[in-house]
Length: 331
Image (cartoon, rainbow, N blue to C red; front, top):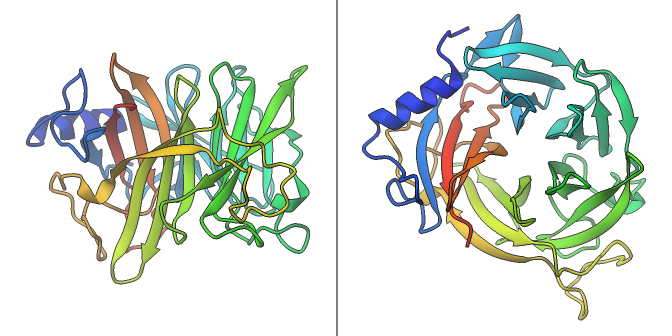
């Protein structure tokens, strides 16, 4: 295991790059007027910790002590501090773990796209609870979802009373590119099914691998696609569920009148970011890009959010575990 820390490597990368993002808002290393990239790091790529492969990373979250938690889709949960990985927990069950949110009591809420499911775990990895899932969102034949295209993103809205999970792709019978975001509301300490909202991707071929709440209750949304021989499409947008229609009782989302999806604004196409000297092991529109799946908000300044992204290397020699530091100005 490399001894340099993830955060130190990211800071060093920022200093050695051709410019830095201004603390008062993205100005240099601009990907768009709203987004700038500070640095990237491949320090974790193809490494191990305590005999466990550090890769297949699908989600990030900031723990209550300020350390970083990183979730592998092979159901392993890493803890990172200033010296790098300091712990790893293997979660019970045959899961395809994709989303991670850390609750105010330190328990871990984790989505799996296998069934799909949302489970709550203790800090030590003990299963504590499984949340209810609407029937239509379950994988066929139980529901209308496609295997490996269900719950990917997971986030707690400000205040911690509402949990939100994003479906990666549309249900059978819904218009392609129109996805359902499901919420759960906290009731006497437990999460019960809440409202559901429609979200439209920029293109029907794009899915949503991650979503993160902003301090004002809006959502940072990652959209991602892949085309062999071309590479990844990765876009960052801002969505607002606050005036959207509750679609939990709408059987099929086909653009019918009276159903108002979440409003959204594209913030950046990451192919437009400066490369910062990055290299890619397979064709990409920008060598900086890879299979980006995880995202978390790590802090904020007066005008922007500090956002950390991670790519899932799928334990594939042609892909890279890469961390990205962004600054995002909310419109």
